[in-house]
Length: 236
Image (cartoon, rainbow, N blue to C red; front, side, top):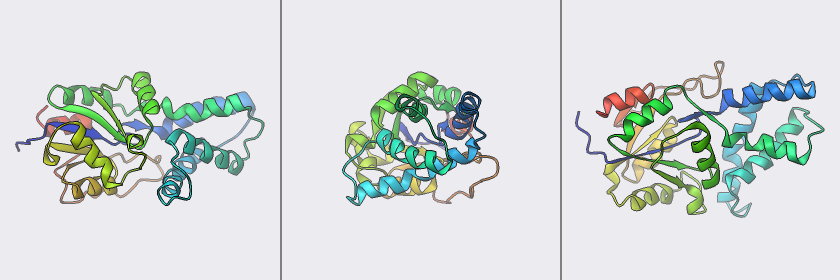
């Protein structure tokens, strides 16, 4: 199948990087240092679970515009209390919060992105703030051509303006841009703005005991199990 796609824009958290196992890995070090017996898989999901509700509060005007780093920190305070992790200094809390800057890519991500970049322009299209996305790219070797963030508009996906921004900044037509994501609601929001949809399944995003529904929407242009299969299907 011939695709007239010129650029791929990527959801990042869960699609490109694996926050669940990264947080577990770093959390086990905290357990050793502090003598805790914290279930860091549960922490990862509880922390991530506050992502959308906090962003929704911003979008409803209940909170002023707040970048994701600060929302993560607000959520962290709730998670520390929920899991009774006490005694952390301000410096330690800040280091823990910046785990989101150190997220590791899925095993196929860097190789797949490198292949795709030979044929397409690659950019993030994330709710992560710009500095977070830059740090993550440098830490994990993610080969982006551009960093696009909802922060540039001071809104959060799925606000239609985020998808329109990516098309405009790339000087392309909407149908020439594909959003690649593991989250079908994000893809459908992009489709509503004329972008193509590339669904990449990430069954372990929430850990091995929380497998999401991976049945793909039949309207998606391409469905793949990893970035190398995506590259195959897009002819890269």
